[in-house]
Length: 618
Image (tube, rainbow, N blue to C red; front, side, top):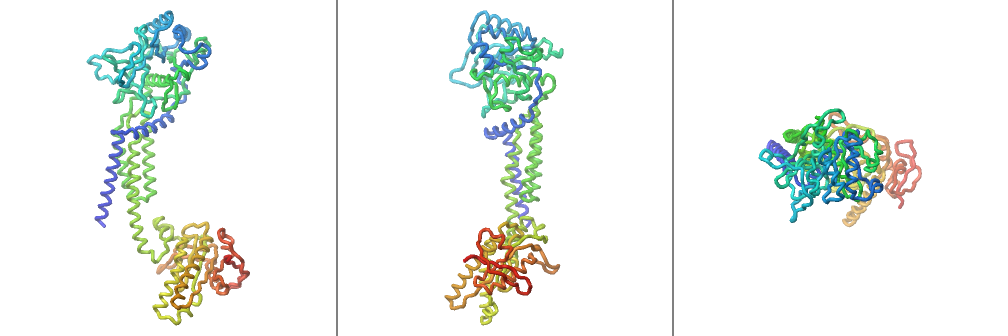
């Protein structure tokens, strides 16, 4: 026993070690499959965390379908874009304007001159797209600008290497504020990160959101405060910032560019705010997938980035929660707790424990996502899954082995359904006497004393054993509970300890199979020159007290009630009917699968009761 216990604990330790290694591997060596599940769960958390209150620091001016219809198809003349910027800055008094569009080719000269003047002297930020895919032929369009030369002190600045760009034409090279709007979506196509800085050649370029806010430096905010000169978001190991997506898309004020050009937009929705100019028009094709929306205008990603940087500057967005040590400690302690619990609980109890630990971790992971934690939110769940598919079945197998030994010991004395119920309920409550609806079958051999009077002791014993086998096999096959043997007969019932809605039909089906078994048994006896035997069966339903009944000296699982007495008297009365099977009125009323015929009224022996009895149609 001691050796078996040691082996069990070694097996549990093995499962625990495997589960912990799986959790750590999910964190430090994430496969694409694990990463997708991890980010998918994180996205669901973000949806729940997103703030639906209005974001009053930022407004999006949208070149939407309405604007294209009123102002003409894209591309618009540069003079119209300059009008937009001038109206926003001079008329509406916005804090800064960011053009989420790239102008790689020059157009109308007067409009170009106005745009350049605005980009040089006004808080107007332009955009350029860096390409982060290494190609056989690099994409090089326009002239990248706005970067800082890489000097020894900047060697450690987190950045993402770019291999090409689509930038504004050389006429806009002197623009004061230019930021990158290029990105690398995750493997599932969702945009969750943007580069904090982009490295191209010997220069480092800022993000579009950072360039926009830096462009407004020196200008007072709506509340009279001033923003810091540099806003650098925290970067992960790949030089990228996880976009906070703190606000729902509906939180952002979106105004049609046509309303701005015609100066009919409410001033309260623009004055003192940062403004992003982008497009939701389908024809312009600026569509991305985000954790909050499967199809969103690209400008909304930059809006989320600007909101995040403003939160960072105002102290509303704390540094990302590292928490890896907490993850390892949680995984280790929870796995130890799970192994101890699994060893002492039932299979379902073990599953409930693992589910409880998983829920506890999800609460902690939810808090981590709120703090922009980069560690895996699914790592411990892989450990719990390992225990669920390994340790729990192992412990269940061990329990089954113990149950098998119990069944092997007692199966000759107690009906199998009773044992199954005892094992399922862990030997509690199953034997407690309860009032149940049952259907009772009582069967025995007619004329047993006369038949065995001329037989030797061994011959009588063999006849009794073989005949009881004919009665018992159908009862157990139809999942009846074998109550007891009464010499040459048996008592069985359905409806306890296991509920049985079709108990009456099962009892009658068992009776039919008993009669078939006896027919086969008699054929063998006739071949040996022995007389056939006849079986009598009585079936009735009703309420009975079922459970472990007896005394401190001896008890047994049995049923007590009027229906047992009626079934016994029906069995005795069957000698007067050719079929040998009598069914009481209560059982007959509950039959669904079998057709019966009435045999009339019968007076039950030993009582003054007369009841109508039935048998099966021939």
